[in-house]
Length: 253
Image (cartoon, rainbow, N blue to C red; front, top):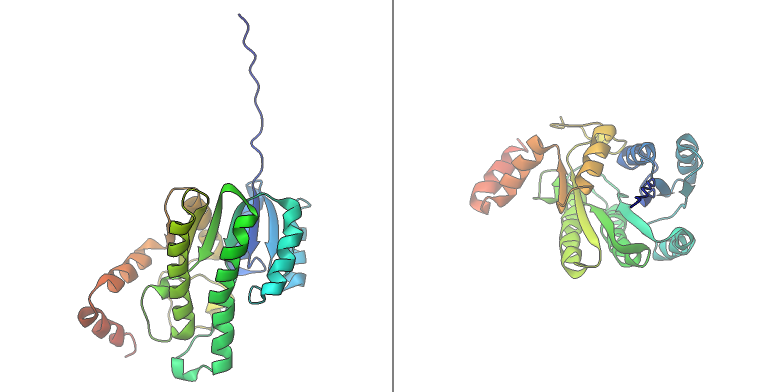
């Protein structure tokens, strides 16, 4: 009796990264490209996307878009359909303005809500038609969404909404798609450079990217890091208000 053995290289994953032009998104693109994935890179800045794609090699494409504009996303989805089915969709795009609630203009607040929360809603609706059965959709919340913190303003509120959206979507799409939640702590990016306070347990985008990829390859719903910081905020959010609010007030003193 003869036995014929054959071995095939695993098929590279096709991954759509939204918010890939810099920060965590660009670091994710570099790490996934290093691991052999085929990438679709999206953000508003076409120049930055072209520069990133050129640095990664020829196996990747760029699709510029604005997550706050449904028409822009629908147009992008039609382009991306040529590369479907996707294995993963990773949504990271967000706006951030540090400061107190009283300092933010209503116009800027509306823009942040449109990009951070409504943009995540758009991606949640559009992604399933592009994903393979059982494919992964990851939305990016933040530890800032765990509980209202000083100077978190509308950004924290939108991230609390994204957390809730991901939880609902996980239940609604169970058995069809793999919904995940990414909750970073402080990461060294263009956005966090605007903070005027000391950021505890801050990590580089490269460390964040590896934590995200490794976490998405496990069965955990939420990928949060660095844990020495995120568990403190999880504990704070789990306390009753009579205990938590005095602790939060101390952060402003």
